[in-house]
Amino acid sequence: MSGQYLGGRPERLLPAKVETWGPFIFVNLDPECEPLAKPIKSLANRVAPYFDAELEVIPEQRSESDCNWKLAGRAYLENLLMPFDAKPEPKKAAKALKTARAKTPSFAERRYGLSGGYGTKYSSLPAILEAGQESAHLCWLFPNLLLALMPDHMLSVVLQPTATAMTLKRTTLFVDQSAEAKSVTADLAELNAAWQTALAGSSSKAELRQREFDEWGTSLRPDTAAKPLPKEDSACGYGFQKYLVECILAEHKYYWTAPLYSQPSR
Image 1: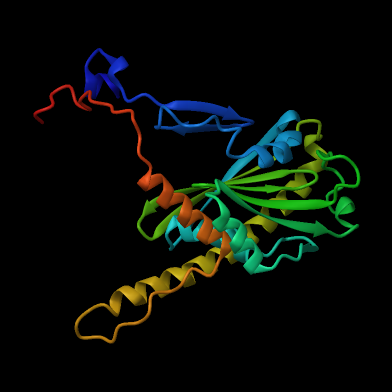
Image 2: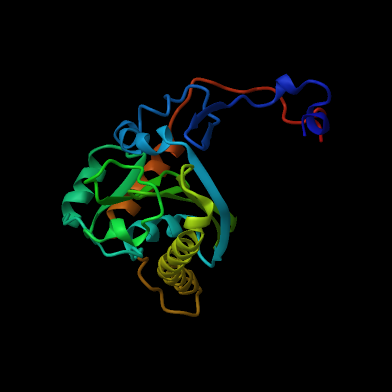
């Protein structure tokens, strides 16, 4: 691509900050951005046991949703029904919203308690967390990475906007490499199917929310009665909107003046 747009001078490409975090690569076009570990410090400590393990990648699953990608992320935390016997930890929405307003968040999360029988459900999967840590975390790393941290596996979902109201979800399972392939095949197939069903359920909620916005847009026509704009009643959704606004309004001292094309007049 550099040869196409910049001739033989790839050094004129827009610089970017790149960091690796476990199996993920993060790219930020702001050359003065903070190191990744700073805004997600508390989450990094929680994810560390997974990235310290030797993880094996299970083939990616793909699915599409008829909704904006931001609504898909919101529904993941708000509407996902865990495919296990799990109960969300009690947390008042008002308190969560107050916390989100206190500072600009870079991620949102929800914690679930798992029943004592979870450890025997997929007994062929080696544990990643220490014994007694029977809990699950759903995380949304802004803008488009979703994680599910389980005692014996990790799920990642990358949200890729393919249109204004269309989102491609790239879902990947990670398990410990010490798992023997023959013994875990059936469990992994069941696990994948369970997660896909759960994600499809949350996607249906996101698509419903998308239709609410579409109907509101239709109501703005002169020949129709205007409807009130749907309100953001989600703490994690509010946090993400605040994150976006802060990014848009941020002022930077760095300016990149080099042309993006080898022929600026084009």
